Every structure is written in C-alpha cells, then in structure tokens.
Image (cartoon, rainbow, N blue to C red; front, side, top):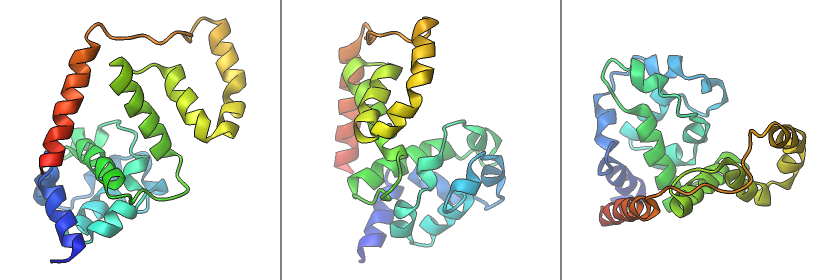
Amino acid sequence: MTTYLKLQELFYSTGYGKDILRCIQCGTCSGSCPFTDQMDYAPRGLFSLIRDGEMGEALKSNTMWFCSSCYQCTERCPQEIPVTDIMYSLKQMAFKMSTVPSGLKMPDLYNSFADNLKYFGRVTDQLVMAKYSMKHPFDAIKSMPLAIKLILRKRMEMRPQMTNNRLTVSTLLKQNKKKEQAL
C-alpha cells in the first residue's frame, strides 16, 4: 500500500474524514467561500482529490490555509458536510506529515493561535500577534500604526487574559491529542 493511500485511510479515520464521502460535488461550498480565488483547489476540488487518492497533493495545497472559518460552506451544504471542521483536520494532518506549503504565512498564524489557546485557555490577540511577529517582523512593523491606535482607544489589552478553567481546556486538548495519536 502506498504512503498516500495510508494517508487517505488516516484522514478517513479522523472525526470528519468520512463525511466527504457524502459530497455530491454540487459546488455549493466552493461558491460560498470568499477565498476560492486564492486557493489551489476550491473545497469541492480538494474533496475530489482526497476521494481520488491524491492525499499528498491535497495536503500540499494551500486550500485549508485560506479557510477563514466563516462556516458559510458548512451552513449551505445540502449534505450537511462540516467543511470547515474538515479543513481543521487537514491543517492538523499537514503539520503532522510536514507537508505545509512553504512560503505561506497562515500556518505560522495558526500555530500562534493554537499555542496561545493551549497555554491561556483562551485567545489573547496581542500574544497571538506577538508570536506570529517573531517569524514575520516586517508584518509587525506594518501593523504598528494600527496597534498604537487600538492601544490609545483602549481597544487592546496589554495583559493576557486567562480563563478560570485553564486546566480544563488543557486537559481537553491533551485528550484530543491522545485520540489523534491512537488513530
């Protein structure tokens, strides 16, 4: 069995993987997405690649990284396929398999967001951007005028907020990771 078929089986064993088998290729997801013009493959095309056994190509694409989690695709899908959740699963697989496309900034932002959630139990915008800025300092410099305006208008907190149940969030994330590793 080739590596790509193993990847396909691994994807189908994730929480939402088999849901794409219900896809009727109507294109509603792709037509609902505000970023399909930026993607290598629209969601419908990505699902087609996966179903055709082209998992390697799917994981190398930029499609899931342009997903803005607006859930329009999921809301409009006549088959009720959780497209956005599938995109999250594909992001996690791409990291696990080291197939994240080079030259994209979105994976760094995704990592910064996820790390912030793991540590604080909630997302603190300035810390997400601070970690992201370590890898992309020119983006930070370009964002400084906006950051200063937000601080002056008291729209950006300078201290991170922590959830009261940080350990509960941490425990849930660890349990989810154990489930993924068991697959």
